[in-house]
Image 1 (cartoon, helix red, strand yellow):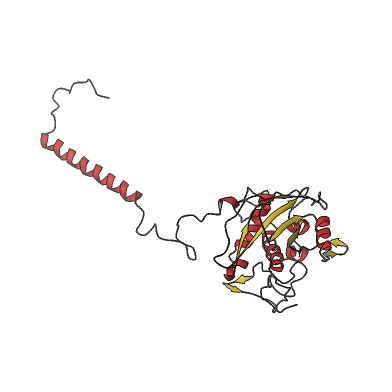
Image 2 (cartoon, rainbow, N blue to C red):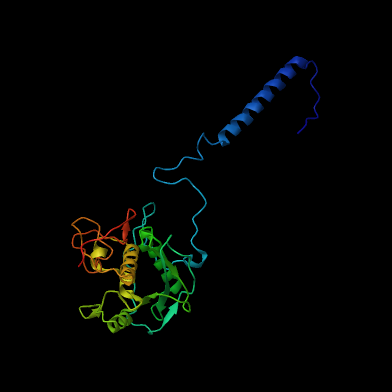
Length: 290
């Protein structure tokens, strides 16, 4: 605010050269302040190109084919203490339906072709009505298993593509309650019962049948070993699709080694470590034939 007071009598004003010196000093300080501000805002040399060890420099985001963008998951996340890493989901809580309607709803999305070369094999995805699972979520999970890296398409001799229910197809991946799974597998000559209860999954005549019990709760020895449920899901899809592609059961190649995907990991590990992939390090990984 400007003052209306007049200078007191007897007080002289400073010489003009003093005012000029003060103005020059102020200008220099202002310029320095701007320079400091700019220097703080500029990143250090090379900051845009530095990445953590083992990571990749940012690039255009990898896109999942629009037809197979996963729906929002309904899997509950475990409660963990603030600041700690989320514990892996080993099994889902709550009751699992043991019997559905026997009819199926399909994931009608058409996916992109998985794999770079080889025979094109088309598949559908379906969930039993009354199973309490969404066909789109199941389709997205099947897609994650079959797209890899490490899946059956990595060999370069096979391509896979999800199609809708009315399209020409080579096989269907079903998610079925244990009673329906037991009936479908039994009709194809496969007994999936353990202790009188339909327990495992199976593949029969163009049908890959995933048992809802295993899909939701995994198996005891894997839960005890704290193997994530998602790892088991990747395994069971690749194992049963492997049967559809003509692969037979294999054994553990040695204690402490990774289990072949065609080993019956639902029932035993025989000293091997759980492994959901048919290809490891870009090479087909297998064990002795059973």
